[in-house]
Length: 512
Image (tube, rainbow, N blue to C red; front, side, top):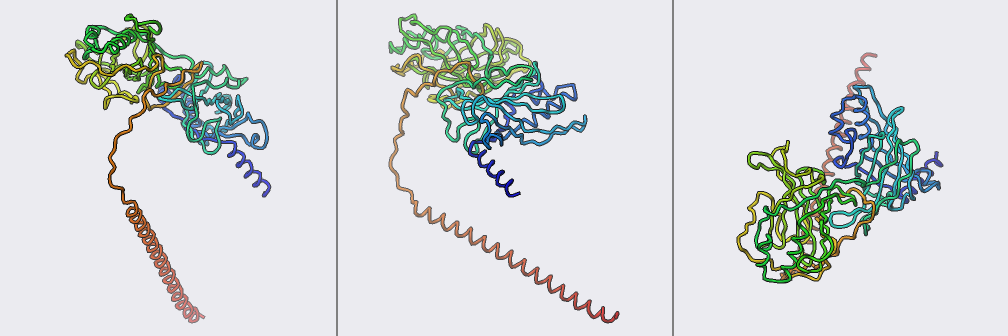
């Protein structure tokens, strides 16, 4: 027995040293056929398929992923184990009971290396197995690169689910995921996962496939102060600023809006149709892609995606997909706002010429079964000059003469990657590494402060000390009272016992 305890302790120690992580499924990240999502499962008609799908989600809702005992004891370092937090799943209406068994994993690389991919089989009941894969890799986040724990599950050739796990590294690493501060420097893709011979198909590439659309500005819809409309450009006094804004107008005529294949369904890219060559005014400047952070996943409607691009000047751009009433008819629109500075806010509408994006189809206009819906608030973007993004329905910019943009162009490279909003999750990889996010072009300005009186740290420390002393004294009094009360009860019980015995002895004598 002692030997077994020692071996068990040793295996636990080795497992901890090699790493493990606690993974919890982010249910709202699930995509795929009806069997993959709670809402889809609720619509299933086949009772057994519905029950098995529900049990799979329960078993897969959380795992402890760690090296296998065989690996900890010196076996192959490509082996791991995903132990479900849920032990069983029962569906009494069809007399179904599923044991959530540990999933033996085979990894493409040693368990502690990053990026990585591990695959295994989760048996549900006799004849029903789910083939699962876990991926760790770097993805292009909203404003930086970050690591992700992605997953896929194959039921059959027609049912493939995908989702994301929130992970917590307890000790060491889990599939190479970093502890503490993220160390990702660029986006990448995980290695090809080990093939499971009995699986009905190979695991698809993570992040493969995305929706995109071609969108063109509707010129008669553009409004705003000087610099927003083409006919107001000559009124900009600074020649260089005027030339840069003219170039931006040309870049913004048409975009391809698509998912950023690096990972997250909340990250998109606006790629100008015009990208290279000189502007018509002779300025040698390329049109840069705009990395957008979307409030909802890219394909959802309504939605808002926002980001920024640098073309010697910084332009903040937001796209809003929503529905409003026009001439008594519910119409879906793709709205836009461009902010140069706090006094220059431009607005306009895009038509969706082909494809699908942000929940809009080709044409971008049509009856919307949801009725009138407002777009969500855009995500924050670093350096944004206003307190909040302007929303459709707010007081619209007009063509009334106002001051022209005053920001002088900088010497920042025109083809630098763009800024993106700073929060929201991440998801999927790209088929090739993406560009590294741009370094900040401006140093943050230190706010001027005046030196005020030094805080009385000594007095604060003293008051905290007295507070803790009072708390300790209070605890002592409570414990003493409890002890005294218990002691009195014990003495009372003892007294009653003696009295009972004294009464019982004479009675026994009399009977005798």
